[in-house]
Length: 363
Ligand code: NAI
Ligand code: MG
Image (tube, rainbow, N blue to C red; front, side, top):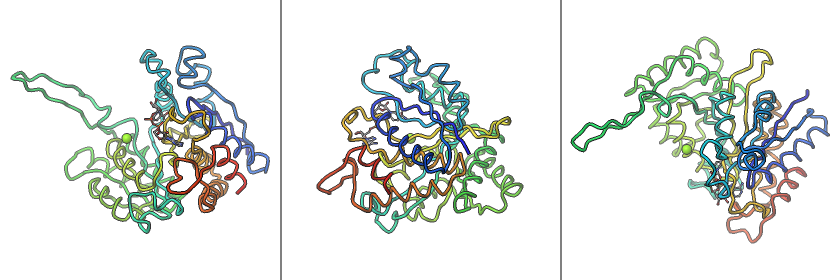
């Protein structure tokens, strides 16, 4: 099969880590695993410098047409003073909005070699592999009314509104169940139905969807506060966790600390399946930013970006085996003691971005 990848390396360390992914994609292409056609565009500060926009219309069209978008990172002090609507982050927000990327996937994986960098005990996190699916375009961050009212007497009232409609819960539920089928076939759905009406609806919709279309997947429900506790107590009990925008924001940040460095964490944002092409809109990016403090020095850890590409292979293209191979290569390189500076810990030396990419490729 042949896949069209649109690369948006962005600013700072974005281009440095993207170069390492291109090597991996070229290798898979040359070994006949799949054909990858790669095109590059500009996003963020570099796009602003080139044409005064955080992403051009032409690049937006390419993103819409691609089988998957690989995104590096945007931003940096150079663009602190540019107008708000063309600031670097606006490019990423535009992509999320126009591609309608409502499902944010944040895996929490722990490579054994880095288990001691976690804030938890080794046996709790070693070989951890869970996936948090966060609803990204609805809920209390967007619901109306959203305002501060002056009540007089020096009193004000801040209001945010949690709103979820059936279709929003169903589509995020579908993403979670389908992911579970490609993983360990278990979904934990989380809300607070004991105190929130939107939680009652969430629970009902997920339960009905499960019964109707995904009865082969194991489903359990857990209140979000209790799930937070379980995530820290024994995270390996989970496979896929699906939850709303607010709870997902907090739970995915908690989960990220189970696994150590920012330079290790991949993510994906998924939208709907296009009725014409039957393909799901998807953007894959590392969790980290453009790291201007280390940009241009060969210090960036490319693992988060390479692991994001592995997610792309698994979830957009159904190429589970090459994805496993990449993750295994990362684990082996770490086992061999190779480290970029950010994950060096107490080891005496570190290798560069390029050397890490080459080592993973060699594995
Ligand atoms: P950051 O993630 O860029 O950096 C935080 C710290 O982690 C820095 O010390 C950095 O050197 C280190 N770090 C990050 N990724 C690393 C990697 N792959 N290898 C080694 N070390 C790494 O976050 P920060 O400093 O808050 O933001 C810097 C810029 O990035 C800002 O302009 C911010 O707006 C932007 N940003 C962009 C994001 C995106 O494009 N999705 C996400 C977060 C921040
Ligand atoms: Mg957050």
